[in-house]
Amino acid sequence: MKDEILLTIATYLALIQIGFCEVPPPIAYYNFENKQSSSLDRTFNGNEATGTGNYTFTNGGAPNGTSPGTAAKLEGGHFRVPNIDINAKIRDVNDGSYTMSAWIKPSALNGERYVFGQTSQGIHHGIRNGGFLHSAHWGADWNAQTNLNDYLPQDEDGWIHAAWVYDGENDQALIYLDGDLDGENIQRAQNGGGHLIIGARNNGEGQFIGLIDEVAIWDQVLSADEITQLYQGESPLSSMPDEDEDGLIDAWEQKYTVNLSDLNGKDNESDFDKDQLTDS
Image (cartoon, rainbow, N blue to C red; front, side, top):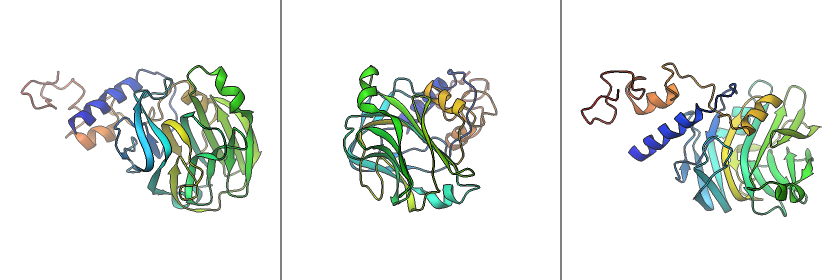
């Protein structure tokens, strides 16, 4: 527990050094720094992701992400998020818009390698048709423009930032690759059921093989500028409330401490680690 708290402090303090404009808060965000089968939702919305199958955690996450210490390594496994029912939390909210983004380092581009899916048909976004980023709402499928077989060798570390956006008001879908628009198409709303899956589709089919990091989900459209900011290293948590301006979001401090001043070093009486020495 203590190690987790200290790691989270370090993560959040690193995030505020980035200094970009804020993106809207996501409904879920996973950086896998806790290296546990139940990966914490860093938004503190309680949407924990549970690993299943062949997966591990490895040192060295996305180097341009906000928490590059650790990534999840999927080799026949995936993560399930039972608290995010796609219909209840996304499709039936407002106009059904959403954004899903992640840093990925694929080690297999053949076949069907899905980054996002759900337990019954519906959403299945990932790599398909010979190495293209692919957007799909089960029967409404299309490829982006860039073949990753040609693109990845130009990228020294092999990591890419991929984002899938669906504008429910206009039935428009967009795919971004490393902050740039890589394709757009008309697409009807998703028509499946069940909860969110990370690293597979349709209850575990078409599993992604490789490293994944910095997974974030929004129930709204992110703009092109906001997607670019994520690629450039902005934290998905940058707009979450921080009343005492100490770099730790209020939800985190309220979960682990008595009050918002316990960790900021500005209170002459705060002593978070109970060592009889004030934090200041």
